[in-house]
Image (cartoon, rainbow, N blue to C red; front, side, top):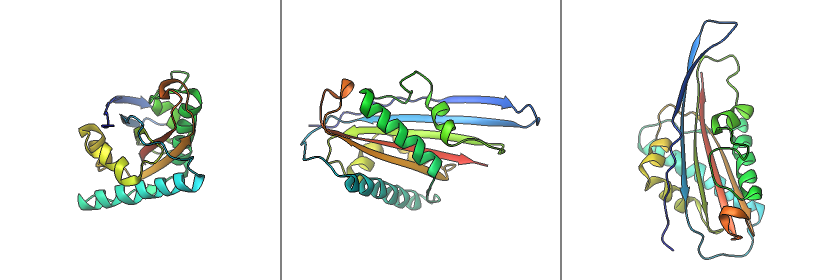
Length: 192
């Protein structure tokens, strides 16, 4: 099947004042997603295959960033936990969105795992996709590159860290129509 792309920007900007400090910070969030119709279902992917997909996406994305003169992204355990929680929640609850199942925005979800702490600046972004279970890193990156908003998110110069999660589901409910799918969440971030 031909991939279908759906971009859902979730641009948010907020400025807040810390009670204990008079320092302002900016929060800019770019949320993007790609939807790809499943095709060519294969046998259930073992966890090793989803880990290989995550590693391949990181390697390919960093190669792309280097080609554009940008610093490579380093893995963040906090962003990784946020991505894993979201991929798993979408798979088990049968929905596909940047918002959490309870309706909270993705920046709030990510902040539970990747907090601002004592820093003055915090910014996060997100790319999502779901596809057939045999999607590989090259296909995932190609889908995101063919969407101007997703491409922009991957090539955003301020990002320094990333969390990646690929989750395979043999029969995903709801939005996924019982299909065998792989869901990928890429959470981007920077804290200064």
